[in-house]
Length: 335
Image (cartoon, rainbow, N blue to C red; front, side, top):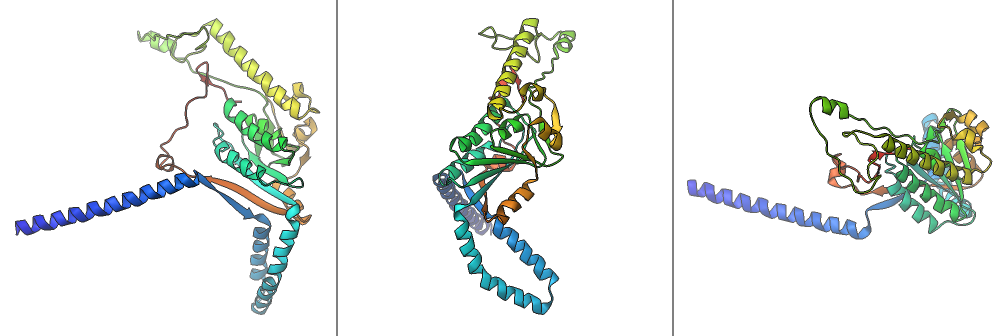
């Protein structure tokens, strides 16, 4: 009986091993296929068709049983007409991109793919609308994000940025690239400034007889430190770096919005939509929904583009962290 049990266990282990090998092989092939096809995929949504579909759902809900049948027949008859109208509007197209920013502007990964796809197909009469929401973040990250929108502007394509909630600091660095900036009445804009802070526990460590040895090669390799004793020379150099970054920020905005009084706007303050318009930070007060509805009503075909990045298992579990290359003198510099 024991031998039969051992034989059964051996067979079971063999089958389990075979299944695991098969699953692993299929997973490897799938990953290899994904690598060959890229790290993600582009999704395109016809927003005009989406709005029409929602309208039909509403009409159906309000109609009686007989009216519903009539409506369905009418929609089937008009489907070809709507398709032909969309084709006729192909010369008047609006492409919509969403950018929601975090501290590290991680959305730039998808943004660069979306911009590349657009620039391969845009025509002279096309328009790109970016629905932008960001309170800013790291200098180099938002500099890269702004440069992606600059690619659209340099291609000569009309670029409109819509701010429904916030485009401050690094978010405004991106927004100022646009030909037109539209904002909701209470959207937050501005914050053209640079900030950095670093805790220092040197005195606490010293009180407990803990020494910190900090060795550097290069006079300003490390200006301020969390653990060691900071010096006046280090503070002065760090402040100089902040001032330099702020000057570049001001220059970037001034070149793209020449009518803006940059000295009045670049104090680090924020303004709500209507006040931001008076300051010259935005061109008009209008929500993105209103603007896109207006463009669709004028006969434009409106398409939403979204690049979906393939996430690793560590990212899906929330275990991945961004590469830590964002240090200037040992401290992150958010704009």
